[in-house]
Amino acid sequence: EPTDRGFEKYFGHLSGATNFFTGDNTFRLNGKPWSDFGEDFYTTEVFIDYAEQFLDEMLTESPEKPFFLYVAHNAPHYPLHVLEEDFRKYEDRYEEGWDVVREARYRKQVDSGLIPKEWALSPRPEQVPAWQDLSEEGKDWDRRRMAAFAGMVDRVDQTTGRLAEALKEKGV
Image (cartoon, rainbow, N blue to C red):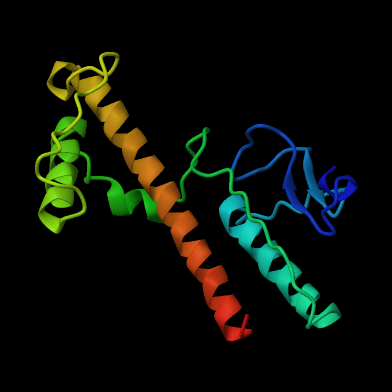
């Protein structure tokens, strides 16, 4: 248990992966089994709910004491479980495939000055096929997979922003 290893408070799961919508029996709250998986449970949101709760508790209990708040999302690791609204944002984003997206991102980095124009785009890894070589079924699978991944990252960004806002509101 993390609370046996120096953490005063802990919310999360002890498994390597979990269902983002239903959780599993390894969830813990402060060293005790937790199973309050409601109808709208989603790990990324609930992790931040508890982070905000722990922040409130720390600032109430010891407002002058420094604190360490560590949030370790399991998103965007497998399984790729994304909220539908986040998936829909990216559903059509990857229609052109990874080769086109990769080239566009590279161009944007060069154009913005992030990387020098002398730096060539690295070659696609050998084990990754050219997008054009995939079957239509393969393209559809990977397009949806990339959209799910992007949606999960987006939700981590949203909730991290929510936590940052809570820190600002509290003046810490």
